Length: 630
Image 1 (cartoon, rainbow, N blue to C red):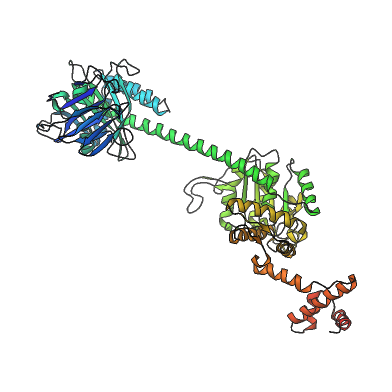
Image 2: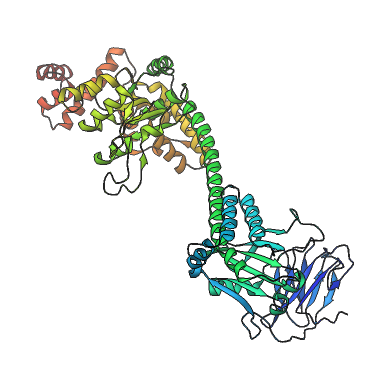
């Protein structure tokens, strides 16, 4: 039985504890019992094997997995050490009068509110010794960028400007729980590392409450007497303590606590004032270190994401150019010749033919692959914003320009800038683009200075730029500058032999993505897909295959009836006009007769419009109608 009247009781295996329990499962300083605001609290001191409270039929764990503190009730049983065979202490409580900073025994020697900081700093500036000490402290704090080094510099500075301080600790406020403060760093004078004989510094709750409620730095003398109800005072044998808040704006980030555990020489008001000014400098240094740490984490995350995206992009770009038709083999031959040059490339082709895919292949297979590939659709940005998007702008250049912005030319410096839908660019912006191409110089909007850039331009268009030049909608000089090496991508209807390859490619991708087991395409469905004209080209084909995979039942073949109406219509048409077996002339005549009938029907028997649609003269139409008896 331990009959203890102290306001704080330490429990553990070490001989320095009030309650010594020689069980090897217990830590040297295992836990504490202390009185706070008429309640007894048990705190586990981050012991190796933890603690539990047995309350009736309940067992409450008190360790890192749950909580480190819990209110103790009369009749509770403390279970310490090995959970299977713990040391058991039955608790009988006889509470005495509460003692805290808020009660009658409040004996705070000095307090300085945050609002007094300018006056305190002005006072210290007039003291040569104090000003010099703070100068050395500020110099020490200006060096480190790592948080751990900054905290060490703060603690060293405290020991320098407060000679009576024997122990220093920095408590940081938890972002998840603002009521919780954790020890970010602690030091004993003349010790760089904690030892078995050193006494740890724990946050005094009474002091923290004073700092929070008063927004002030406080000095408490004779702390062992004045703060007897606080959790850390008796165990640390503190004779006086200083607590200085670390403010970031209106938010309290933490507290610096300096203890004097020697009987000779209490802290003075001058120590409090020096610490208060140091606290302002320390708060800024700690905030800067936290910011640097966050920036490094963000930079490393972005670097990892960039590596991942670049690797994924390279694999995707190289693997996704599908084609074995003669027209595509001609395109591949052109790419091999232009990839490792600086020549400007203009990719022509209908919408959905894969112009950006080819542009990225030129970049990622070439010498510029380590730099950025930056795509920009010129039709997707309003004309008045496209210039800023390409060349950047200075702060204040126009309404809403509240900061400097780098343009895509600067981002793509050393790499490739892909300008899609170049035919949509205004004439005024075309002139600025021409200058950037000719001289390699750009001028951000609102900036008097030009900047040199090294950017390879690849552009794309679904328009006939030569015809646009004839109409005056596109600059002739820019046209010739862009057409150094034109590449024409054939529409899908000109490479029908690639349709089965593309269907298989997209089918494999989306069955894996959606984790569906679909049997595949039936021959009739594949014939219908090959017979369709695909005005949307590869993009339309990809969307069709994706839809088919989504709607298909498991292990079932895709049939013509599953296809989109426009594709099914073509398939039905092919079935209707399929000629009967016979000679080639007979089969061709049968198909021609059907086409003439369909054209006449669509135009309501108007022969002039029918002839115009079929691309023949009216006389030629009459001859064909007479030939077939129509």
